[in-house]
Image (cartoon, rainbow, N blue to C red; front, side):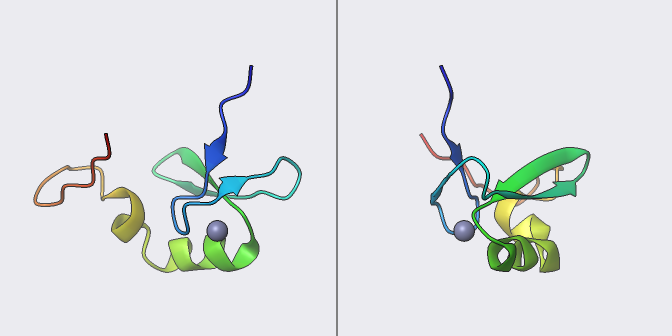
Length: 61
Ligand SMILES: [Zn+2]
């Protein structure tokens, strides 16, 4: 069983073999293509928060 991986920038499901990964705060995030990875790299906190959890709610249920 594989959990589908999702690109945090565009929300697309990532196909194995095409993913680009970027490490941020010791976590490897995966992206559908280099453009999404570059978007993430320019402002990672926008996509995943800065790790403090303060003042930024990004919670999907
Ligand atoms: Zn993408």
